[in-house]
Image (cartoon, rainbow, N blue to C red):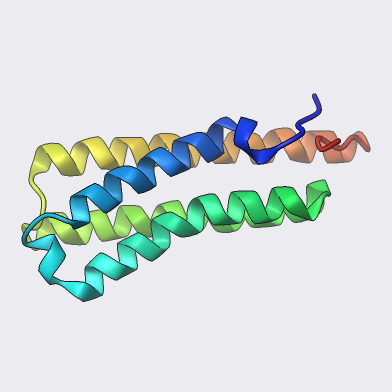
Length: 129
């Protein structure tokens, strides 16, 4: 499989959707008043798609895998921020559950793509044209 641009990656699409949801959430009260947690979760969610793109643009599987691992770590950071927001009652249980489910799903997708790329790397194949 050859991929010509990062926009065709499902994990990139999913990460931008998560970012859109997080930004929408952080515009609401009381989240919007707490600059610390608001900016932290926004930075973490932006980091996901940014690292997917940066790794893809490096042009080789080793670098792409490295940046995907960073992106996966950022998904974990978003999940942590969601837990904190729930604990301090900035979000309700339904919002917490929905966004956490989406984050876990994205993390699994990234992990699966890392496994796929590692297999391709072992065979000497590269995914980018």
